[in-house]
Length: 446
Figure 1 (cartoon, rainbow, N blue to C red):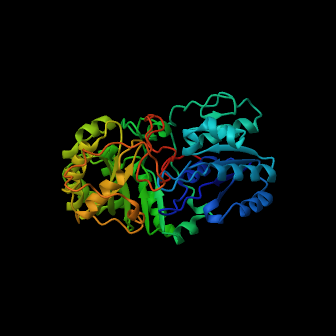
Figure 2: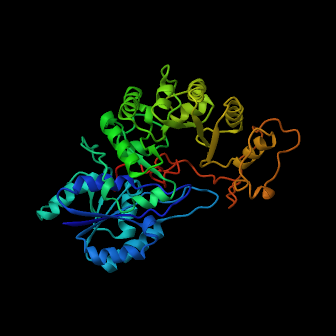
Figure 3: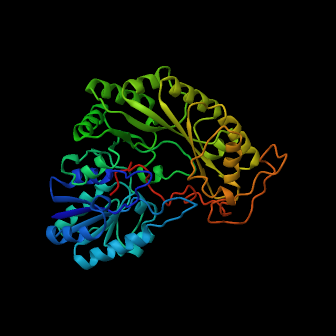
């Protein structure tokens, strides 16, 4: 069969992300089918896709929905209308079977099936498309195939794949040059699944809780393939690279043994590392570590279900900085139980983290998030970018004599400036800004 895999993602900020999942899916079906990949970002729009459909005449089109919105409270953008337009144009151009997939689809399969009018969907890992195509060729029943959903069928996430998976299809990727020219960053995966139980995260829902490890040697070969392709840098898209410390160290050793020359980055949990851990990572080419710190108040970390506490953050940070790495920390302000005192504690503890970049995200409670950032900015400790503070003239200042933020009270207001965060009851399944599925193209979903 002729299969066209379409990356529907059009988000390019802060940089365009290579659609790694489609490589994995293409590799899983390429031995039995004629497969092509079309990337809307690389094509520059929808219209060139129609020409590809006309010339290729696919029997099946797999449409990957990576993000549902941009998760930016100050400038909210939904991508669903764009997906509807794309699906509508595909339907007008061809009678091919339309199959949806991707992390965004897996989070909202019912809604996407109904709104886009697809024939099938793949929840979870996209390599399961191979099972659907096999049944379609044999004209066998498709109901009951794990991970395959129909408009009125079950949308349950199947058990994770046992493997093999995670193989790249890079040499045949027509969109490769676009990403090399627009940042030069590619990506790879060394494991799937996440064993942690953070209350806001969608990774266990998409990939399962059990870690499934790709061999260090295979990961190193993937890295060399990216290097040969011309990548200037790559990002390891595992949910948490150090979720299995021994495996991450084995991967680093395999990178060294393979002679990898280009730098790379990864996402880490700020758990206290073994002695020499980040030195080994740096020797293997790791240039920066992104820590999912979220809070520096132990009570909030406990509510978030985090496997670490503030002292672990300090130790992990010190080890990474000591190894010469660039370091960043991501924070989620305004989660369940958050108040002025807990944010005071977090901000005070942040003062002790040197040589780092901090990213703050506001969640689901009416807290004056921007006041906190302005407050620190005026202390001269941090210098937010002019873009971030472009609306600062509209913001109220801290009251004279206020020494703590604990006196601030929630307000029932949701201004477009993002000064207030909408007061809503947190919903565990939707709370994290998980309208956005995968931030780094990490999962192997179509």
